[in-house]
Length: 302
Length: 76
Image (cartoon, helix red, strand yellow):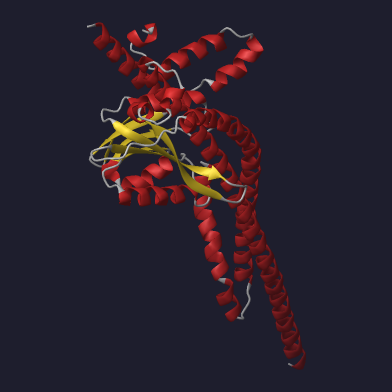
């Protein structure tokens, strides 16, 4: 709600920066221009307040998101250890369908992390055009729905309000496993949290039962065939939870940075406008003084 | 090995969700409220066909319906 309202005003602020040059060219400073500058200054100050608040909100959310991320990492990594030890590899071959799950969120105003993920997905789709897509989050849905609508099979919304829970992940995993097609490998695309400044869209694999059963070191584990499908569903949910939590942390961190930059830019603009405002005010005063003095001199002579 | 919940048409994740809900509900009042927040799920989803988005539905109820269907198939 807030973000929508802020956008047109931000744009107005940008437009305002372009104008002072023309204002300076017309040297006749009047009260009208003075009022105009004052109005703009006020609106920029308000925007700065909004972006500052959003930054603070994102910062507090970030600490929680990071905690959830480190916790979720152990889920994903532990379940991945099994596949590493079993040396599971995705099945290659003709007629094997791949599913890509994109983990974004519903909210914007956080720099380019969503579009980075869409770009990565598009690059993956170029290599394998018949891949199916599942998108979590409105942002990537609208981006990928425009360019690759034919590949989309499922989209989820409502994520990103809060730290993602395991219940979210397992519900999504259930719905994915209910899909009619049989996928040989499921690739989950999410933003990896490198540090507070940089993220990178990466892929984690969730394997099919066949792929797990055919892994070279599979005999190391004593697994009944019945249990295997459970393992697969659970591993998918684990990986999804990891991806969602890490993506959420990246988003909050990116939003914090974006809002920090926005506040800084607003501060710069405020400085510029303050100087312009003072100059114009002085020009108006000087102009009036000149008028009064000349007027007085003229009336004295007459 | 046959699982009772598998016969009832539940997936493993659903089984986990139900089991964890039971554990959460049996906690003491103050811990329960914090724990139940971790079990909340309020997602919506839509199926896509030929580049068109379908209807937006609640994920929880759709999952339940799918499981019920699976159960009906198993018993018949």
